[in-house]
Length: 225
Ligand code: C5J
Image (cartoon, rainbow, N blue to C red; front, side):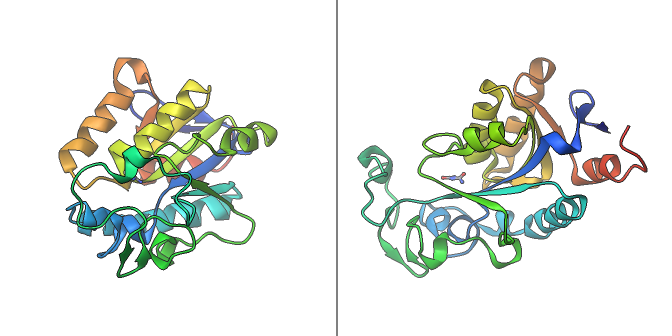
């Protein structure tokens, strides 16, 4: 067992029952010209965590932990994009419209790909998801159950949207989740802080949080006890 000095209390996991889940580290959310920016957001806050998430991937791969990547993506005909999602708000461009990195949030388009520093390696599972949650209309739950994964180490963007939704979905399905505080980010710092507080309140009602350094210390402790 490994034990991370987490909030609200230590998080314990077995390495052979744990995967890293990286949510939506895509150009569409992180680079200028993508979906996130068309909604009026400053993407620089999200760019800042890319090197930290890269260190998490390096650590996980070095330790032999499975890594799963999600991307928010719709089919080119938008048949999996509810009109309510496409028509929401007053963005400068909508899902499926052509932006500087191709059609927004459409699979196969340059902007829908992962940022270069965080590309999946061969053999790592990539889940395309039409919603905010990683479990909605995907095979993620079946994959985790069939591989005996019960614990998730979560990273990605944005903290209060796709990350929080996915962590809540995982929690309801019985997974123990640790969110890496410095491997997640929001366009709104106050929403990130509030989300971390909400997830860990009431004795970890949704799960745990810790820093990458705290995870690293637990994983590299000399022996798995
Ligand atoms: C959003 C996400 N923010 N990945 N998606 O629309 O959080």
